[in-house]
View 1: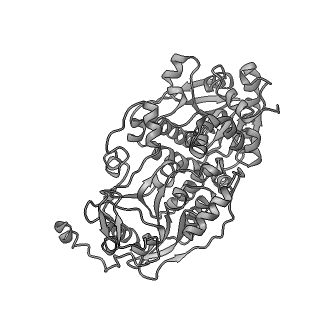
View 2: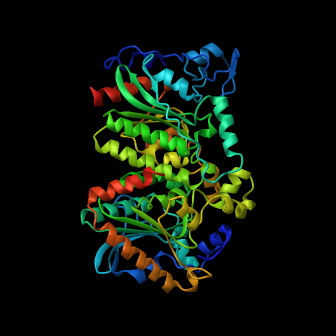
View 3: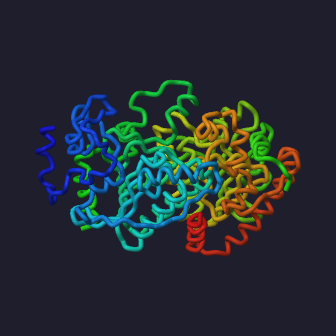
Length: 284
Length: 262
């Protein structure tokens, strides 16, 4: 820890806000929070100041999209895109519309992603942040269409794009339409890439299924947050297929790094430094 | 089109004696030469790739192959590709682009393989890269779902200008068994799941996921494989004639807009 404080002095960047500002954003109104990693109680204020990372065991508790935006972007720089995309229910799946509505009311999100533009230490970038509290951030039409429009906006405006990925996979209730989102978003990223523009993926916990098998694996630079799970197939499905227990660190960020599928693993508190470095090398 | 339920079509699509990709390759192409390997790790026998002549013109063929009998099915991992299979497919597609020949893909898989090695070698990355790179190919790409179109494992060779399905083929986000297990916590409700998932050729045509349906005999393709192969030939011939008239930029833009509208 101490060592960390003295590292990286050479590439010092302007100071950034390092606390989660919005008190409304999904933080329980309690004095103490139980860490999902070690089970110990954390004093609420300490937990907030520490960017939702357990000060005892280092567990990175998932952040909401709003918390993430507050953490990453310069103060007042984020502009949210309001796409107003109509709900898609291609299977007319029983209770799906009601379920969506209840998630919308609970989370105050339109679906599992927030898109927009913002600045990191003055460098403007397009961004999509997925939010795991909305149906496990599964990808249906609205998520796919929102990300595609944002990537296209970045292409037209010659901006880099950062996507904070987290997902339980495809939105089953939308059937094949959710599968098609994988191709649509990947195609938009190809056009962005062909213009020589930068795409940074940040893998947050957990990123799986169709999101792993599309845009989450396509970044020019892929950054995984410490402790994030990154995989294609679900672990239970694999265990059933091969009839064996899986190794301990299977599909962890470290596993992905060892096998060559992410560039960097970073602690949450260092994420802004890493993003800024990558952006400044490409965009200044 | 015969009037069958979705679950009945699933059973036909999975039939042991349903013609697999190797049959169509043998019937439709001349001078087929199989090319192996992803030039990186291995050759995946769940995907057959190669070059051939179709109606007197060179093409590249990519096909998911389940195998005919049990020993061949085992050898071909029951048509469930590993990452190296998708990487081989992409290598051969890029080769096709270089030599300006159309790409014909036959989709028939229950899904990309779920195993430890597949994860270690980046199943997600392999599929993702195919989706991205196929979108920009400057040659015609036509995919035909001949049996099962299982999720990302099917889409990874399905980013085409045109997609057709055999009448009893199915194409889905997940198997009906998996779907009912996830959404209803009961995998025995697969028949009901098949009924709501919109996985049949007719349903997918109405959702604009595919452009054409190729007819099968009453009991399914196994009843008269030759007739079905002739239907596939006719479809490919007509489609490739249309697509080869377009230039590379138009083809990739048309492919992008096809998926952009979904």
